Amino acid sequence: MVAKRLTAVLFLFAVLLLIMLMALYPTASWQAGVRGLAIWWDVLFPSLFPFFVISEVLLGFGIVHFLGKLLDPLMKPAFRIPGSGGFVLAMGFASGYPVSAKLATKLREQGLVSRVEGERLVAFTTSSDPIFLIGAVSVGFFGNPKLAGVLALAHYGSALLLGLIMRFYGPADSESSVTTASTTAKGSSLKLALQAMHEARMADGRSLGELLRQAIASSLQLMAVVGGLVVFFSVILEVLTASGLMNSLYIAVQHLLPLAGLPSGLAEPLMGGLFEVTLGARASAAPEGIPLIYKAAAAAFILSWGGLSVHAQVASILNEADLRYAPFLLARLLHALLAAGLLLLLWGPLMDAAPAWIWLPEGVLQTDESLYGWSAITSGFQTFLLILLALFILSILVKIIHWIRAKRAL
Image (cartoon, rainbow, N blue to C red; front, side):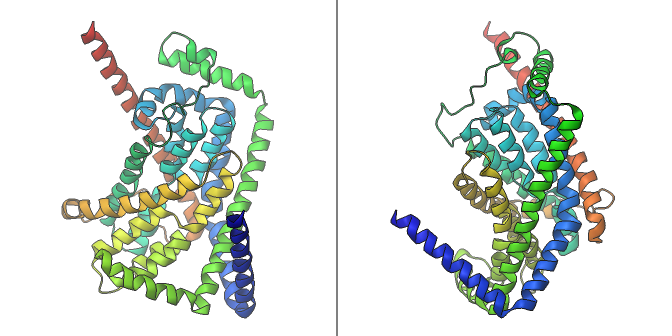
């Protein structure tokens, strides 16, 4: 009871402080709000909205159930989640935060994952989209295409490593217990997958028009929430900077970083990335006199942490189901530490062997934000299909290995 009262008092104090700062710095607040709105409209809305709509349509048609049956042999032993989590993994890595949180919540609402499985799923599938990591950060902010490979491997590799770690989260009896005719039937994986898709489509029962209408309506509602949070945190960071409070935080962090063996000049990027991933990633490339390896490690940390803006977006989505935010928070911190550490380990071998140029999809080098959304959509769907293909191949290999072992055991 005392803790709840203390939390309420602190929250009220923070709100009053924010109102006071906005009143003292109205110009800064207005400019930050306009910038946040521009980022939402030019970048986030066109790049996220299609994925939200299409993913809900695929769920309604049973495509996710179909994919889930085919990916069960890989996802269950590796990550202790049903095969439908493979769809969330592919979509989350391809389209970036917070798409995976929305999909995991939908799976939870349909009973396809348990509470713990949903929390595992959100924890390691929340990531940056590849066009932002490659085009905006590596090429745009750092001006170094060679950085894309090591940064992507550190970010997505540490996410998969986090997924393997998260398989130990939760009790052994926390797996979902969804039982349908397709789960108990005998037959080939493809037959079971088709049967699961048919059952899901019949259970949904909505016409294509109704499915599209509801998918668009719910996606627009979610995009409004995302936009509001982006603007909100943009204003917070700007008024804290204008008031000088951020400088105090910078000084405090500057004294802590050398204790970890890191340059004190990374304090500003890390504190900026604490609030907003784009601002932090851009600031990580700016400090002069700091070796590139440390600036890249800071960028990997910030991309994997996601910023409080992304955290608020995910928390608002998780509230739609019974999924808890605390495991996601701890997973983000662990992902950030793993990504930075993995980049430092891989830096020497990968950067020395990397060519002076890398293949990049058309549009990734696009600096015009008005064209960013289209580039994100095209590269995102390409990445989604490639990840699904890789997961299918791995699933087939796992089944072959099990078949060979069963033959030898006879």
